[in-house]
Image 1 (cartoon, rainbow, N blue to C red):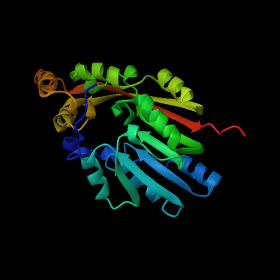
Image 2: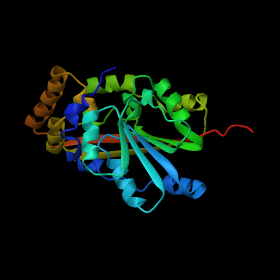
Image 3: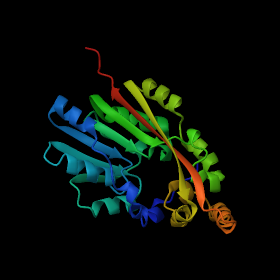
Length: 253
């Protein structure tokens, strides 16, 4: 499995404004109503954008915030935002909290985990009784026409190794002791200016492009340049998102 060099990506990651805005996570409010106070852990928190948004939504509530990421460079960017958060450089497989996390979220990061079964074991162990785990990511199996895959198809084949399909995710979650598994899927199609996509491609902050070697990455750029030189101005595009939520089953008494 190829790896993304987030030391390089960290330098340009937050230049993409779409990564800075997150809707209010209503499940935090639900868990607060159930428990009075909670600990929220963002696994693979990157530069802390989700944490930043949620802390603004819940600034007056009794919440302990924790952010973990395997990249020290990404966490340094998060720390510069002066969030009320305990940050730790740590892989998901090294998660060592014990039954104290009320909500554990993993946004656009699960595919990076080298041992996904081990990560699920540690996530389950970290959650308190009836604690919630939430997963959000793209769904590559449904978006072969994503513009990145069109110009760099090698990235699509790599993602077939990195991403678990939704049925496998659901099965593994239940096997690891999670219940009340819900799956929601969003799919969008659009047409985008090719010149704007070319600029995004050159930025190389998307993990699918950052992980490819320079030769393959350059081939994708050549494909884009050939399309532009041929007078193509628009590119069809699509993207699919997968949201999964589940609870840690309560122990029988």
